[in-house]
Picture 1 (tube, rainbow, N blue to C red):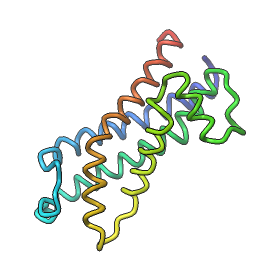
Picture 2 (tube, rainbow, N blue to C red):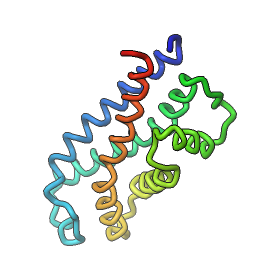
Picture 3 (tube, rainbow, N blue to C red):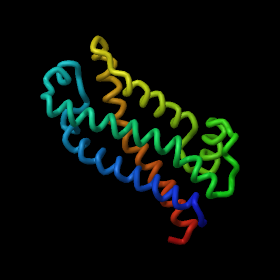
Length: 158
């Protein structure tokens, strides 16, 4: 594995690693508040909300980068043609390679990402529900990323 695709892959990995570093920091701060209730959400300080916002932002960024950049680059480095493939076909291939838990799980993570990206003042109950789901799935996303990273490092012998 050589060339511009490998360099691009390494850049994407560095970006993912940065998001994960920030996720870990924010998670450490907010983890004691979970599972979160409506009254628990209302009791959060401005600093607590800032950490939650950081966790949400970095989760959505990580999910975006993995799906939009890492997945296609990984398959390209494995010799697959992905430029014209629909995303669902990319997910199916990654599932067959056992690089993601399942296509359905990735789609559920994407839906959660979309729920988290839209915050409406009148929907605090939905926000709390999405935040609780985030706390349950954030490590699954990180583990999936880590598995892809390890798989590619093992293939390249480094």
